[in-house]
Each structure stands twice: as structure tokens, then as C-alpha cells.
Image 1 (tube, rainbow, N blue to C red):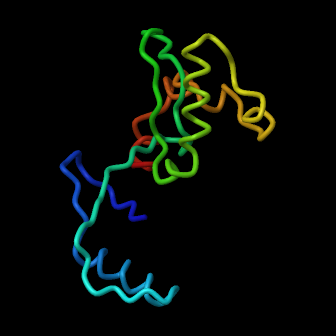
Image 2 (image 1 turned 135 degrees about the vertical axis):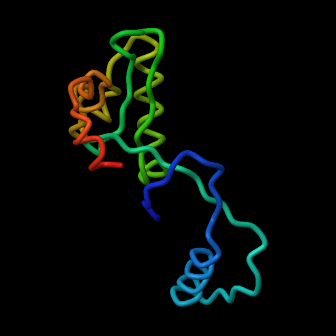
Length: 124
């Protein structure tokens, strides 16, 4: 769950992070890690306000954004993908998502149009 800023690149897991993860797994379970045969890393995107961006672009409505999950993708991707699919199909928020307090105003790409460059730098 590292959030170290990085330029776009072909991401890879640092050896020390893999070792720390293996040690924490061993301490939290009865699993003994003999060898790590594969590891994975990815780049995560963030926007200035820290919330995901979902919905059609206000300047190019045929382009639909689904970005900015920055570390919460595994937890939020099922709901956000349903929101995105519903918007593409011409619907609104799924009822169960709206009942959780999510609003389109909090997701729309339009909310970021007036963000200052200084605010963007803080979030990256």
C-alpha cells in the first residue's frame, strides 16, 4: 500500500517491500514463506480531492472517465464499475450506491475543471 509519488513507468515490487510483506504475513498467520516466486506492483492514480472520477467528460461526452481510485480500487471497483456502466447506459447512480451517500456531484470529472495546479501537486 505504498503511496510514494512516481513518474509513469513499468512498475515493479521493491525487494524490501516484498520481504516486509512476507514477514508480516508470517507474523499474522501460521504460513511460513519459503520463497516468493512472483510479485506484482502497479501505479495508482489520485486526483486533487482524493475521490474517484467517474462519468462522461463535459467537453467530450463520448469519453467516460473511471480513474482516481488510488489505493481503494479493490474495495471500490465493483460499485464504481456499476456506476460507470449505468452512466454509459444513460442511467444514474444505482439505488444501493446512492443509499450509501454517494452522489454524482462527488464523482463527476467536471468538479476538477477549476482545480488549481497547487492543489494537484499536494495530492500527487
